[in-house]
Image (cartoon, rainbow, N blue to C red; front, side, top):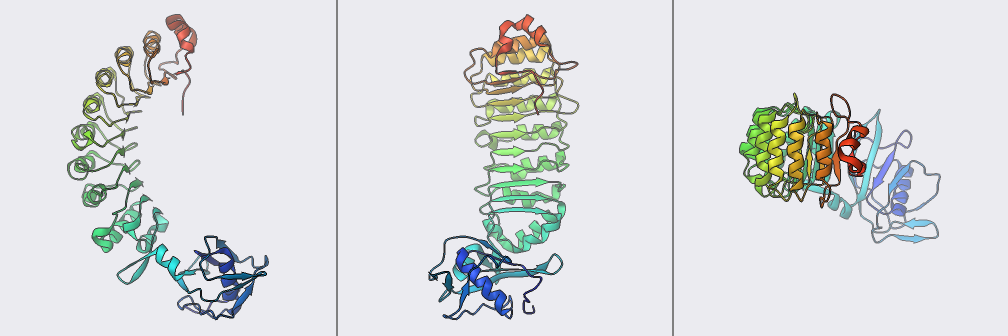
Length: 404
């Protein structure tokens, strides 16, 4: 790479003290002869004036590295050993140069097969940033979020290059708009068997039942995942049945989110059976299923919540639960001691059934949200409810307006 001219260039320096790096930048710009592929050689007598006129220097202040001496506005860079970390061209030939001390470089990068990879605990990748996968140390990534099939392919390639140590620190993975296939299961098995993994969010990926079956068969058993988000996909009862049969969830799973899929009463009844078998489960989200779960599912869920002391939130909004299912839930709430939220908004609950639900939460030790807004075919009238439930309708825990 050629020498760096002073005009039309931006110097970004991270990793050392603000005073030292500003001085270094001034020297760098002043000389205009050092290339990004060569160490910056500083002599003991090199000094630079710090002034507000050096507006091309952007700094990130961190604790100064010794030995750096400050005297009356001048900085003496005596024995601070400095080395370039990375230099590259982009955005119409703007040159970004990252310069830091050797010690800080060793903290920020990891050597792998003769290359320096950046240590990035949090990585977010999209289609236009998929190339970043080649520069990241995947054994140090804690939180990974990617969006696009191209990014996923780049991560898989980098995973193979990294070897057995890849993703050994991973805790959270979020994937969207990446169209996960059945033949990707080997990668997901590796991720979900890592000891620190806690969350897998694969929403909005057009997931189908064959993928979930493979996950349940090969990747999820024995996993430490406690949060599983599968919302907004194409999942049917087959996926719900596979999830309900998982054995590992009896000791790990806390959150199961299946919002906006295609689960019917058959799948919901199976998931209801999971509740008493999973003493750690705290949230079950079955909102907005197509065509919608009804009274049969509500009755199974009602029976289940009487046999659990862990479930805190049961979310059933925008389904087809009517009076029969609502009355079953009202009876169950009276015998439950753990629920904090029961969401029945936008169902087909009648005023009389709603009154029973409101009465059932009186004296409940933990429940603080009972959502009954936007009932179909028309919202419940406060006047009707007052006639059925009396002053109980004024309970602050009862929500009669639509929530977001």
